[in-house]
Length: 184
Image (tube, rainbow, N blue to C red; front, side, top):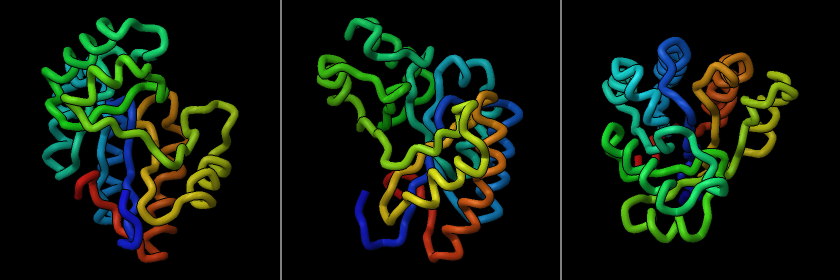
């Protein structure tokens, strides 16, 4: 993303989750921060009220496939079909491949339909071997103006993310950063 504007782009993958996503939304609101949530289609289907909460709070959403597929394990056709199934529920211009795994053939098929969004800073909040302190360090020690940061609003990441996110928001707000949505 563009540099020189004192902006950090927070993103959340794998939700929505009916217990965790509302906590994230509350934390973001306290810091007047916006984010982009890359949602898994089956979670949107299971938790439509939580998905709507994201939109109602002024955040953006992106497509993260219907079943959180690892692109390298799928044919281009099955992968694109899965993404398009999610698109029926999510209706976003953004797509992020789960695990960051996508083949060149899948990219060629998806690029006319989506802006494919990766990241520049990964919190590793999902890694059971990463402590909340290390998760915080993974973000605050590496983030710079214009970076896209990945957290996860999922059960697997909840312990690290819920501990880390408010500290990241406080630290970066104190340093004068704003948190818009992608294209915000």
